[in-house]
Image (cartoon, rainbow, N blue to C red; front, top):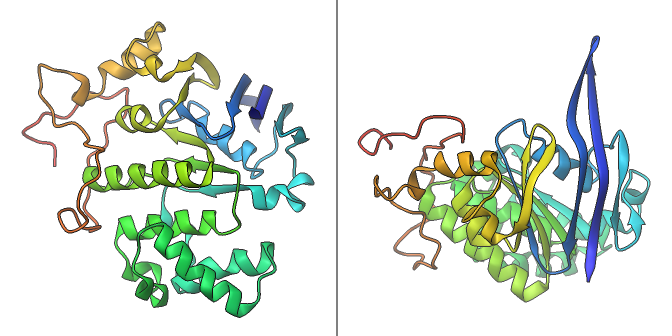
Length: 292
């Protein structure tokens, strides 16, 4: 059953006499329990699309409906505020640095679900279990966690009000490749357990292939190609082909190490903050000898 409908969505930003068309007639849909990957370069409009679906921005024109309810600021003062949650690219920036993990997770439980303090405390432990974090981390602040742990807390916070739709805006881009695999596996596990629907915004082709059921490719605020996961393996649009050509791991001649997305033992790959090289699609790939 289709739960999300996006129809002829447009978003304009005016800067003096100029008008920037961040979204230019975008239409798409999402079936309940599936993942729609939104792929494109920086500036393609993919994050703007996610922000409008999540109620963080207002469209210039067009409509977004979730199970027949039109998404707007008024709707997000009602049930949609609980049903739609967001996970952002940088958990360290999106998490309150002064809050302990338990406070971060308890806040949506108290505000949106009206839980008592004791009920929320019990639920915090359950949320930490769900994202595979030790319960003792509830007493730590974000700066005391690794990057992977921070993102798991951000995911747990999104899960707290028991949403139906989660908008994930580049949730793995700041993580080491091995940790990305763990996060993607976690998201797939949670989707299967909770029948979640995802909008997954990314420029990482490997991650999109691993998690998507359906794909839209965006350029300059428009959808240039859409379809199933095969869009990322057998594209028909020249822009999508250029995106794939710019990914080093898809070039057999280079034999670059692929992002491995099979579950790995936690002891083998701990959630430690390690920098990762990111190749923008329009840039030349890093050479194997120089990539960190």
